[in-house]
Image (cartoon, rainbow, N blue to C red; front, side, top):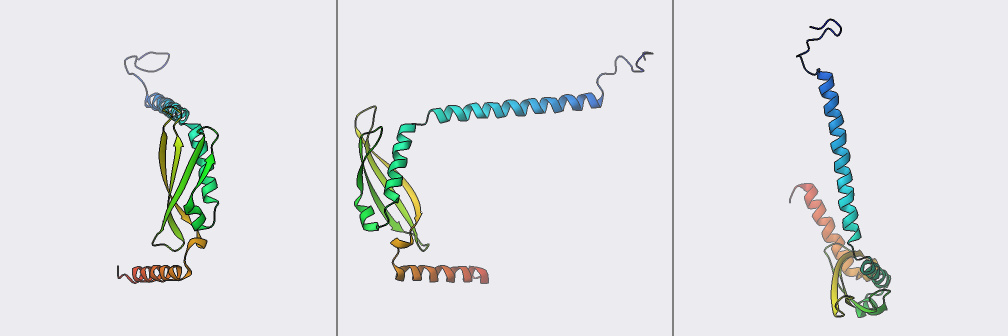
Length: 156
């Protein structure tokens, strides 16, 4: 033992020193991992075709603002900001839930790189009470109520 510190020079680190070093190492690893993930997310965000996404968003807004289902299924034409003229059409079908519809939005627009027309399809679930037939809505609600009561009773 040394007389100044009262420690054996061959002893090594104390448990407090080891725990402090591990805590600092953990903080550093967490910080570097978070920075790495932020860089990966930034790179993927840069690679998104923003003009295409803006044009699709504009067509979605125009199409889904129409409340009459017959008018909606006729489709329409839109002059986009980046892809020129685009046409859209809608196909929809009711689901087992009252007032909920599965909607396919088909958009045909010119690809900027190849100059060819391409079709893009998106699927959405929309709640539109004005599209439902009142009789079908009542039947669907009754079926849903019966299923819920049967499930609560433990029959299913």
